[in-house]
Image (cartoon, rainbow, N blue to C red):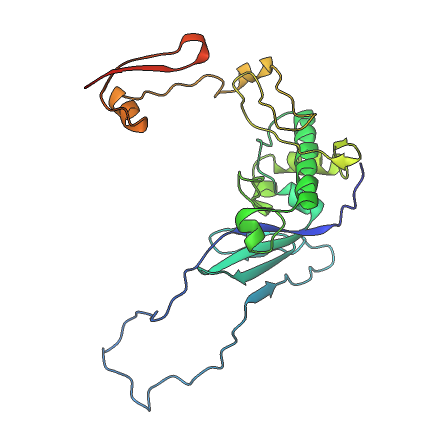
Length: 260
């Protein structure tokens, strides 16, 4: 599928940033004396708004594309909107679709070009699915169309392009511009993960079937271990006694315990 590469949408780049509340005051040096009528700073008219829209200045001819920066969060293309929330403020980035994809940080940019292209198509497809089905959670509450974390897709803005090998990831996005995976004429729910333990799980869609994945053996998390004490197991399962053993026959986990 080919989609317009200049489609603009909004991505939640930060949730609640600042908690607001009455009685806030600044601290600084001074004599400790209370200001008098002659020393008080003049009152400055205040502007109160539920939304602040921050647009970058136009770039000079031949210069780099302008960006906007959210201190302590990141640098982004497009426009930043700071919006009021119930607990403070949140930030939303309005950006062109292909520029958004250049900021996706889901795989190392040092991977082979074909892998990066496949990932770019998967990320674009997942985005289009979310745009067609609506956001959820914090993104929806802030009026954004997708979140910027692992709950959706990790989005880091310009930092991805400027990281080592970032030009290779940007090239993969450009090489696959407008390409997406379809089922029945609509973008699929393109779920993906770093590791799956050797077998995927059913995703509730005809095209998301559980299948074996022998290549997952290359993943550093293909096999992993965790040590849990019998006491912790007993507390987690609210067992009214003492855990004596834990077995795994036939894929099930069986806990043996004794007590009154």
